[in-house]
Amino acid sequence: MHPAGSVIIFTVASGLGFGLLTWLGLGLPDTVGWAAFWHYAVGFSLAGGGLLASTFHLGNPQRFLKAFSQWRSSWLSREGCLSVAAMAVLGLFAIGLIFFRVSWQPLGYIGALLAVLTIIATSMIYAQLKTVPRWNHWTTPILFLLLSLGGGALLAFQTLAGLLLLALAGGVQLLAWYLGDGRFQQSGTDIGTATGLGVRGKVRAFEPPHTGNNYLLKEMVHQVGRKHAVKLRFISFIMMILMPIGLLIISQAVPIVILALVLNVIGTFVQRWLFFAEAEHVVGLYYGKR
Image (cartoon, rainbow, N blue to C red; front, side, top):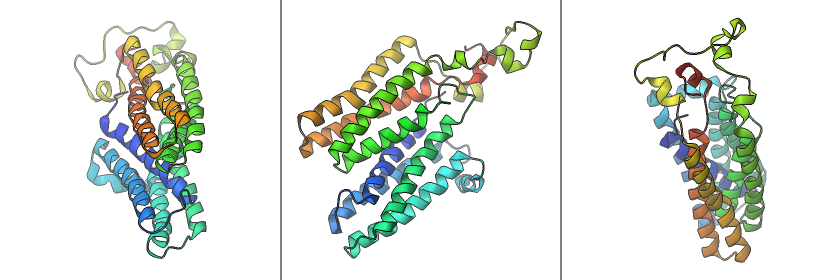
């Protein structure tokens, strides 16, 4: 798949924002007044900014409101509805903390649940796609959730929880890479099943369907060299998981936690670029890209 910058920013920023809002909804850290204001300002900016970035990948961004109408069948629509609900509920919870210095905790718990469901809905946009076998696996939503909550924990200075969640995310990421590398072949999809002609014998492409570039090739077919993919996996895993964990084990002072968070975010951007670049859509079979 084409690793569009707007979608990468969307998944990383909104994931981190809703991860932070989850912890804030649980009352962690326990702050009121201006301290609470700055925490919520960061959370809403990341969550809202990420969602705004996603509209740049729409064919008609001005029609984004229509995305909310298909919640019965579309995970994208469910994500939009859940994100608005989460920010509305947590906005009310934040008003109590900031302006009245009171904790309407039931609202916080509801908002935290909605934030978690938003992260899951985001991941399911990709995990439910049978046309992309690498994504169509239980590790996709689990990894999205662990990375979001882990990064959010560091932003909320819940360092022990962040350390544990990042360690779990590292294990799931290694498993996702290991299983994902063979999932296209294991899916049984080839040019014969794609064309429906496999029952007649072995199918091969006589010539490409198009002589030039088109939308499908631009958006659905992207090839990254195996050597570069392995190198980027090392870089993302070291920066996203190993270095933050190492720093947090050494010290949990504020500057160290901030450094661990910065490294984690940079590594997550690399990981998310690979998430899209390594994904193989079955439409590539028509173009001889598999």
